[in-house]
Image (tube, rainbow, N blue to C red; front, side, top):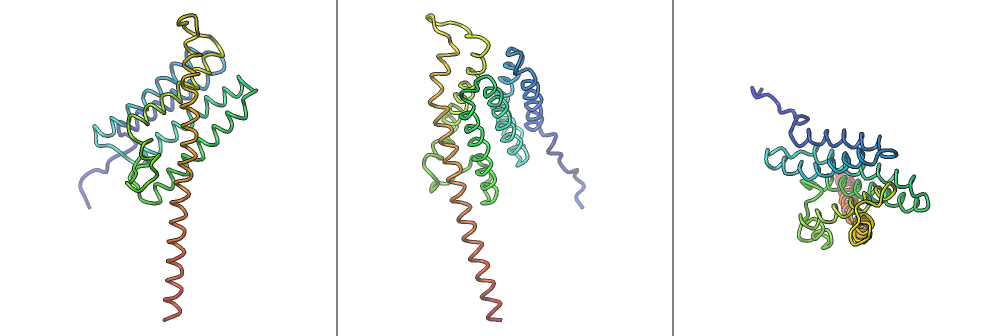
Length: 224
C-alpha cells in the first residue's frame, strides 16, 4: 500500500473557486428581485471567477473531472437563475426565456455526458474530424467572446428593469449593449443545438458499436 496520502480533490484551488462561485450565485439569486446592485455585483464576480478557475487548474496542475462538472453546472444554473428572474420581469417574453433555458441546460448536459462516454478528456476537447463549427467555437478567444456577450446581453436586460444606467450620447449604455450582444446570444443558443446534434451523432455511434458487440457475442455462443 502506498505511503503517500491520497489527494483531496475537493480542496483543489479551482474547486474552491467553484464553491465561491456557488455562494455568490446563491446570494445573487436572493437579491435578484429587489436589489440589483448587490445581485449584479455578486453575479458579475461569479462570472469573472469562471475565467479564473481554468487558469488555476492549469497553474496548479489540478484539472479534474469533478472540477469540470462543477464548473459546467455552476454556469448553467447561474444563467438559469437569471433567466427565471427575467421571465418574471418580462412576462411577455417568458416563452423565449424558457426556450433559452431548456436549450442551454439540455444541450450542454447531453454534450458533456456524451464527451465522458466517448472518452474525451474534456467537453472542450475535439479532433480534426469533428464539426467545423465546434472547432471554431472552442477556440479560446471565440469561446470567451461568445460567453461574455451572452452574459452581457442577459445582464443588461436585468439591469434595464431597474435603471437605464449610464448614458452615452443620450442613449442608455445598457440598452445599446443589449442590442449589440443580442445576435451573439442567439448564435450561442444555436451553437448549443449543434452541441446536441454532435452528441447525438456520438451516441448513435456508441449504440451501433454496442449492438455489434452483442451480435458478435451471440454468434460466438451459437458456434460454441
